Amino acid sequence: MISATLSAPINTALRRVPSWAVYLAGLIPLAWVVWLTLTGGIGVDPVKAIEHRLGKIALWFLIGGLAITPARRFLGINLIKYRRAIGLLAFFYVALHLIAWVVLDMGMLWAQAAADLIKRPYLFFGITAFVLLIPLAVTSNNASIRKLGKNWRRIHMLVYPAVALGVIHYLWQMKVISSEGWLWLGVFIALMAIRFRSFRW
Ligand code: HEM
Image 1 (cartoon, rainbow, N blue to C red):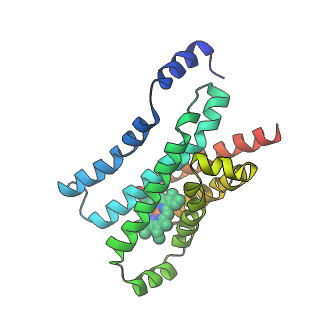
Image 2: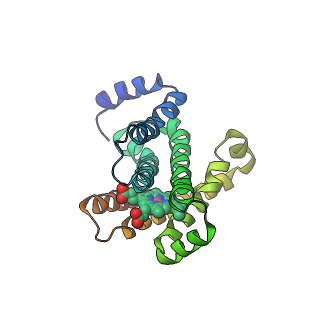
């Protein structure tokens, strides 16, 4: 854990930040994508670029969500209050990424979408990850936590296979895994190793 002299003022400052500010800040990347699209700065292939940017933002939030518990345990920085916001933002961006594929890329042509799924099997991994995240998003409210009790924690363990599938999907869609790809994989494995170790503890 970093020294309390460092983490205490960070936690004091964080306590003043309401969750709604995190939701609002989480929409900035979307505003940036919209801005680039409207101003023509998104690139020569806007559909691909929108799709890729939304996927990458989703990955930031998913990995960011997984980093919250280790951040508290090892750095003493308490972001638990924002876990729901970060998780829901992750789901929101995965959903937008999926919508971008269905609407912009496939033009809502279902036969074409089916053919694309067969051509690019890594899309199945992305879709499975999305499906696994649905129960998490649906039960991310106080009423569900109360109603589900212990089962709530069990359901939310689905986040680990969901992010694993998301990472595999991301790496697989590259022709050759880039250094950035290896970095994301490394961060994911490190977070999982920390988590696994703490379970054993
Ligand atoms: C947890 C779920 C998911 C995550 C984390 C994720 C993440 C990503 C990332 C990071 C990229 C590459 C971005 C880049 O290189 O800059 C990508 C590409 C892509 N994803 Fe996903 N994705 C997920 C689910 C989905 C779903 C449900 C679909 C819909 C079928 C999908 C369709 C695509 C497509 C079409 C590409 C572009 C592939 C290409 O250009 O060949 N993804 N995704």
